[in-house]
Image (cartoon, rainbow, N blue to C red; front, side, top):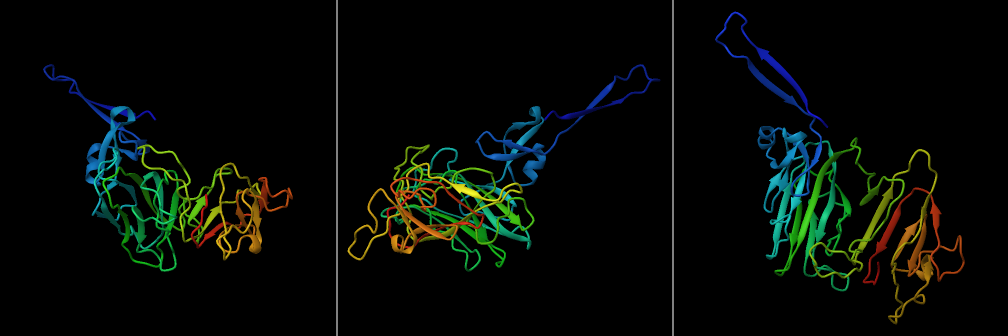
Length: 335
């Protein structure tokens, strides 16, 4: 957006010895910008950025403004409405062992949720489904709001934290046990119930686009820092992924486009259903499952039998806009 410029001319016609004095006043909108580090910021005058506690990272508004970014550091504390929690060496990876905690105070009593957007999130992968070596831990939220301990690669994911019943602070903590490369940049947004980004209560994740992808944590095998990559599921998950219903729609269709593995085992340690097949309902999915339109689904294929009775193939599933619920309480091999 082009800045608006106004010029004020001050002169005294009767004086022949005075020069024409020109003052230039530049006004520009405080809009989003991309900083030199790649983080999203706000275009502000440099003095205003520094006064607000932000960091100047590049220019904007044709050079008249600075891209102002609020960063949250290890052992820091802030009540800012939004900002970025990054590893100490960001945008480069940190290679030292980390014990990095940040305390977030609520910006006001009206704040009900905190949204975390994982722009970069690369830790060591889980071992047998558990985050033994690296951990990202959220604490201080509402009593019944369980946020899973995360590790592995979760870039592009997001989570909602319910904080309406607590005074704060809410703690975001990274713990690592070795000197390997780690990279994280997390956008932190405090939300009231009227904010556009606010999610329905009980949703760990909330999707508002008319189409997109739902992925489990640590599903991706792409890394920006060539960290060890082991796409696999995490243990002890029980959460809801919610989808906003658009005004012109009445249903949602789910189609599997990648690898799916949610394996249930019997008392002898054998898979309940044969490999390469879809499982439906409690006899096939007694312990670990996806719940779509009140139907338990598991196995290596996504197919509830409503379109194709051949459970060796994936098939689309169409339902209403209740939620997409994932329950994996036991050790499993799932994606």
